Image (tube, rainbow over all chains, first blue to last red; front, side):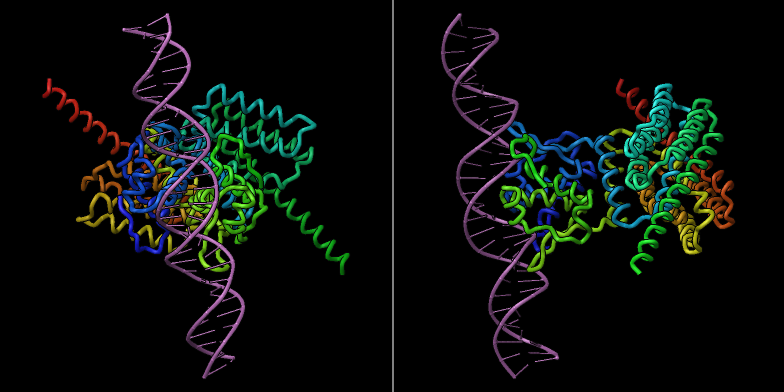
Length: 251
Length: 251
DNA sequence: GCGAGATTAAATGTCAGACAATAAAATGTA
DNA sequence: TACATTTTATTGTCTGACATTTAATCTCGC
């Protein structure tokens, strides 16, 4: 592990990269203890604060964890699916909000991925996952539910569907797509009528999953995607109308 | 933005979280300048090194960028798809290698996602993307190619296919799945015979994409997935055999 | 010999203050 | 005005210190 002190790049960034590369290459294995901060400082010929900045960078990516006290130090962290989920969701959310990704593009991606899981889910879903889907459908039918709670339930429903595929890698990938959509979905105000429609579509999906009928499940997802986009478009349209009215009044 | 000095959690982690939350909530917008390190130190009642550690954490996630000099400082970074790709690939790669994800599970996830892109790609692929696919197929047919170069070309081929869907969100999601598989694929030694077979399957895929024939494309991908798994299984088997032989010799 | 409590040591977490390096802005000059 | 110079604000880095945490070790009574 070496760095170039003459580079214009931050020393802490270089050190972080060196250690990260060593982890990726397998030179540092899971739960292995890194040298202490002082030792690393000596090794790289930098001060301790600089080493610390590098370690914090790695900690931010969940690549290491630190422990205080004697026999403490920085350890190579086993990257868990749960940690990766969280990062993925944050990144995806910001990506969508900062790059003005249109509802249509995000929606298309999300349902394309979800439909990729569907055949596997129809085949493998556990009774437990099916029960979760049914429970969420029931919740979505409750009257006094806020829009936010409705969206949250929607996410839980779809995650159960995705998890039904019984493939952790798929679940991880989908976590980003499904949860990152939530802020966009939250823009939609669900009328009683549209909720009713969505609950019906969700019921179709759950029925198809229960019957392990992949083609029927695919068809139901296509219908749900179409309806979701329809709702979003009407929101956009009504906003434009309101903006136009305002414009008219001012003029 | 506030922190709890009595919490057992690192101050730098708390500060990073506070700023991150502000960014996610939209309180800090893209390209907005954060207060200087000294000002942040005053605001949070901590020292400058502590603030710096927090900022490095955010920099590691590409949430901010820093600039030296007068009028410099930390700025909220527009998270670009390219930055997100890189992070996603690193995370996915480590996730697979550290959690002993089996080849079958990773392969299933990858092809499920890829098949999700396929219909869109068949519909929208540009001549450019098609040309890339053809070029990579040609390269894969060259004799003296190393296994690594063959795998790299394979990745480029599949990325062109995925990008053909013309949906940046999909491309981003798939980047992780396709590239993270590479280390696993690198375990396979490709014989001349198997390369020939893969080139033939890739040609089927390119043909289907050119003809914009989605069902044919899907069928070709299914065949490629089956063949890839077959190859991987034979590798695993031959390894087991070798291990068993060794065991036998020792005994 | 052994267990409980006190001590020690090693490590990270935090702080204060300083200087170096950088780059934009302000200033001076032809 | 155009260009060179100086100033200034800011990050990057260093030194040295102290606080806090925690495991290991030691001590002592039984």
